[in-house]
Amino acid sequence: MNFKRFLFVILIVSGLFLPAMAIDSSDQINFALTLYSKSVDLAYAGKYAEALQVSDQALALNVTSMVCLIQAHRAGILGKLGRFEEANAAADASLAREGKLTTAHSIAWYNKGTALLSLGRLEEAKTAFAKAAELDPTLIPPDLSSVPPTPMPKATKSPISWFFTPLAIAFICLVYGVYCWKRE
Image (cartoon, rainbow, N blue to C red):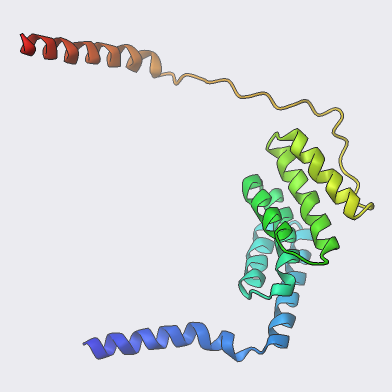
């Protein structure tokens, strides 16, 4: 029985790692580039969920020379999907890469600005757009002069809260009364 489990584990591990090991580095770079291009095409076609999946496949190949560009692109896709916190994180992952990555960093800053603007973080968005434009003057930020600061949402009460709040207070008073009565 243990031998069968051991053999099963070996087969699973082999199935996961041998195909990745079979691809040499130039093939892996070309494959990552192909996936990235496909992801860009899908995003331009408005198929953002599919574009994200393909982009994640390209990222999983862990081709270091392309991670910055893929993450910058992912930030834009995630923003289009309304996943602004994740978009901001993907932009940060792209910006964390060191080197002469001006194009990728400018795209990452722009997509970060878009995500921050959608999150209502206007001042941070302005800074991100300014950094994007500094790296690539062709990236024109949106007009933020007419964007009002996002107000904090008001706390709303549940329709049932009018019932449970007095009930909770009554229960606490009852417990305290029983406690005091038992102490005497």
